[in-house]
Length: 160
Image (tube, rainbow, N blue to C red; front, side, top):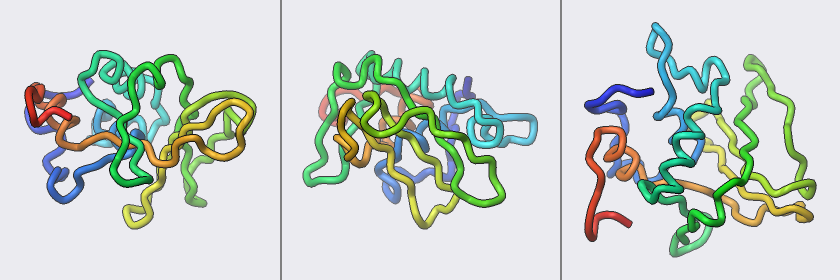
């Protein structure tokens, strides 16, 4: 799915310590012949999100609620089996994917991709019967993701 080495040399984990689930899926996504992310440009979101959720279930990476201080770790049991509403674009020149889930109808994770780097989209967690998100900003540590992508699993105190 991805190449060994540094798959994301432009990602500085000191400058960007947290990534949304969607941005993490972009880094895990395969690339086409021109090097573009297949998830972003071809809407192939299932493979990268499947890998991310497998890593969460195997305690390789952790997901956090980052809308409150201190950031709260979301345990894998809470995320296991929850369907994902895959990202859609919000810019006029991009394809708009029809929503698969409506707030209140089921439990799901809403992932969003905003092509503007100045206004990051937040990934949210909805519970069945509720119209307001249960969790407002789901993120992973970029250092953990880089370590997994480069084949260096963090151990000990540096692993959160």
